Image (cartoon, rainbow, N blue to C red; front, side):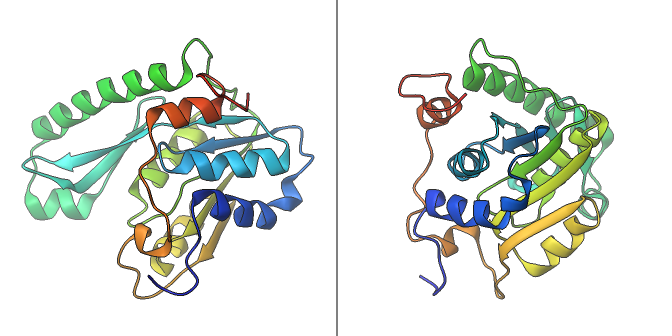
Length: 219
């Protein structure tokens, strides 16, 4: 485990909240966490800044036959972001992209229903939206989320993560109003390398933190 690693996602969230403290008191502020790993981080940010918390679901579009390799992502609201380098290099046909996107869109809708229950999404128009995840690698999921928030007319978009590669933070900084990366190590390798406890987050934990399931403490 590398020095400078976070104890766990909650600890990372508290440190991230300290960097975002200037946003405390903004009546338009909403915290949007990318599930599942981003939710414990976002819950600490929302609690510290006294802001509402919601999930913002993003699904990776995996290359057919190599699903671990992302050719893009889709986000709530039907926004799609493609990686032209991957699509071009592998000559992925449009109909195959559509098939993958349709499958992931169904899963995205299912997850939104499962996480929120009967609760509707937070209103985004005119909001100061803070997008939170537990870390970034390529940033494709965050890019899709940012594009979706722009389409939904957020007044200001802030991307905030505990750890990410320097190049990813630089690239995303050009697409948001503010980019907050607490750690930008090189070599990066993987998000989980920068946590002492990187246990998988369950759906039940997500619902509890959102206030849509047993044991909920927010919303």
